[in-house]
Length: 526
Image 1: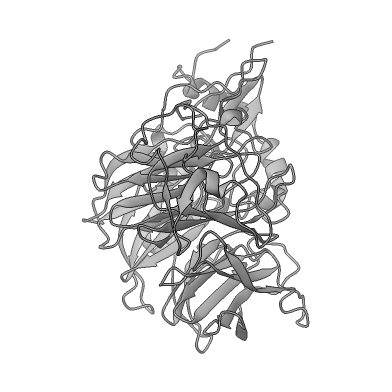
Image 2: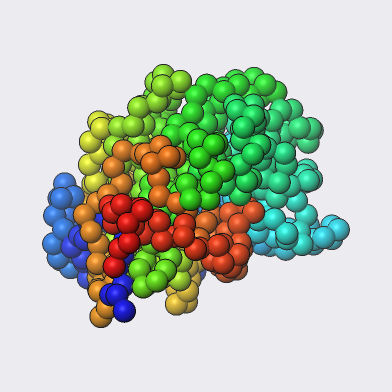
């Protein structure tokens, strides 16, 4: 039998620290004082490791970088922050929470609302994986995945008094909603299940649908591609431009300055419909993977695309692995240019049932990229020169956290990272970190090597994004953000079922394995 090998599990094995911590409800991280210095206003600065982002040595000395504080909130998924950076809002799977982060060393839950819409037909509201906020208006959407016994739609909440949020109205939809973004009175929704898996624009003041856009408007030949290959997974809106991440089909930039008439500006790494009709060309879980989330920098010239993927075992090998983040120049959206790639942290077991280190949700400012990598932790990169991103910050403790996102709260002070908790029982909740350089945590598990040799990490391989025809075929765990139940079948992308995909391995995965080794796909390989 061949030794198990990790194929294309990108990322460089880095040094590890020894500090660890655990979250407690309404209490700061126990080791926060050991990780960083805290000022009287609750903000902090990285200790002796500030400016030493390239040092991957022992982080056990006093003053090593670490979290400022945390608060346990069961079911935590997405986290967003108010314009002033002092109030956070969390999606909880079965509801939402409001958290005071004005003193980031002591984040405090102000309100927690669960079992929403329990009195409605099909209620209560379930799989609330995403929230978004604009001014005094919070929006919670769901269910994240199809086939759920739950009202489908958009819940609008008045948060002018954060301690007493008031649910104003619920706008029903015919489709589940995995992600959304809110820009003033207009909410942009992922409309999977509708024709074309469209971006749907809703006026949350009166509940009317004002516009929609789908891939069919870009190219009618997408109709011949299975919808499971081209779900709209995420949407973000900045300065009148929506970035819609369409999985294997790429990211599409839309002019939404007139929300009733979304207009295509350009596409980033667009898939080839003709190729994606062929199962052997689908690349959902093989790096560079799918388009999971896309965020524009202020000004709109730089786009960050996060890609989420896992590995699967086939015939003694692990095929696929975690994916990273790509940066693009989209100053001319009709002619985007790939600038650089950021590789994921290593994992001793990059399968869905293992240690997750693939990219997840992110935030992008003028010069800093904030990223989350599940059990691979959170990072900050200096992207003032997006052709050469510089890792400044990395904190991870895979036994304590599995981060869903990273978002800037107050520049120069702190950023937020919601954690969904770990399968081993570490609680979910919200963590706060200094907006500064440094390294810390306990990353030793990320570089463990199993007796059979799995977990070793080859040199980084996620270079410039390839076209669909250059990609290996899709491996079976087509994935989206896991649901609160954290089961593989519910974590699949719309239209995907992990068990069903496993049954469809055959020659496609064998082909992926050979291509992953750089071999000839038509040649036998031992």
